[in-house]
Length: 508
Image (cartoon, rainbow, N blue to C red; front, side, top):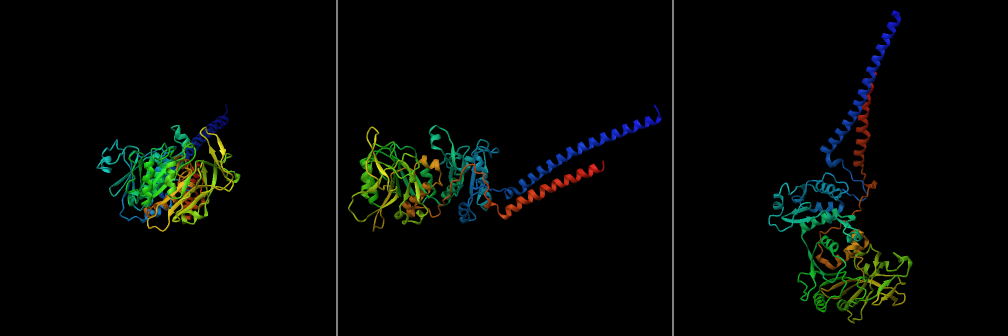
């Protein structure tokens, strides 16, 4: 081999060694650049999360899942600055929120604390780790405080909020022991709990129980509490009495008639200026004429007929049977209060007709609440369940209001021939923001009158898993912050990394 060839081979080997070294260096710098970029992204995330916290957390969803509404904010602003409301979750703070009730609760409670100007604190203390927390919150042992619930305390008073109570559920699934949420009531529940603790109850309602009701009145109770009205069950018995502190008596969805004694006691209650709300549908109780209940209603010149309304105008149909239909709120009832001016139609189901009776006293004033079209009919059902048309096409009332005119403390009665306003199954299926439920709230407010807490608030339900972006919530400040992060900080980090890589490669 010539000397020239040997030198050429040596140069090639040397060049290959240099090339391999450059390749390794480029590989290391590429990997290093990626690692540096990841580290920068993590550091930025940790920095903004730890130092700026909620300041750079934005809720653009239409329903505002993680944000308190203006209604709640305005109420909190009315409280004295020295108010101390303590919310304690009797658990370790949930870390994994996805697909749990806490994904709606934990972020919203953080927003309460952030926007209350120091009035609200939120803590998570597991009683299994710190048993003393139970005695600290409830020294007298008056409340049943247990793990996995939330406790709201203020001025020595305590309310317990269970996560399961922060939602409404599909009633058909509930019958099978399954919980399918239909609406998010977290803010509704916590805000009204705070209102109750800071203001107390202004009135008392008793809900009659023991007449084979289809379901409980849990949702109705929640609505009354939001109005500042405490509730208690009044059991049917041979010694039935209406307590002296009763501001509103409620009969909700019975499937059997009241007793003669109950009818007399309710009449005495009304003669003394009491208020009565009654809702009876036509379904499981189709054979019952509710004779004793009608004795009470007759006193107020009202009568509930033992038929079911069948709508014949297809523009009112909710299904092709005619038993589920829309009804119109009457103009006369709308004029009684501004609360009713925003309502026009409601959903009705298996309704009994409510009509004027033949009581001759002119001081009794009755007003239709909601009516069918002029084409509806009344259907009669015999003991075997066979249906036949009872009357020709006409307009029927599915609800009426009655009072005595010219009295200082007149009785007031609202009677519905449907439970589509007040039953647990309906409210659970449609939520507190449904038109029927809002109308129910207005009717209860009317019956309670001065018994409604002046500081009561109407917080609406929120839909579940609504991730649509609401552009109206993207304020200039929020948009600027998001723009700064995504259009300045992150691109700048990329430019820095690219510059470093370029310089290293250039010098190789």
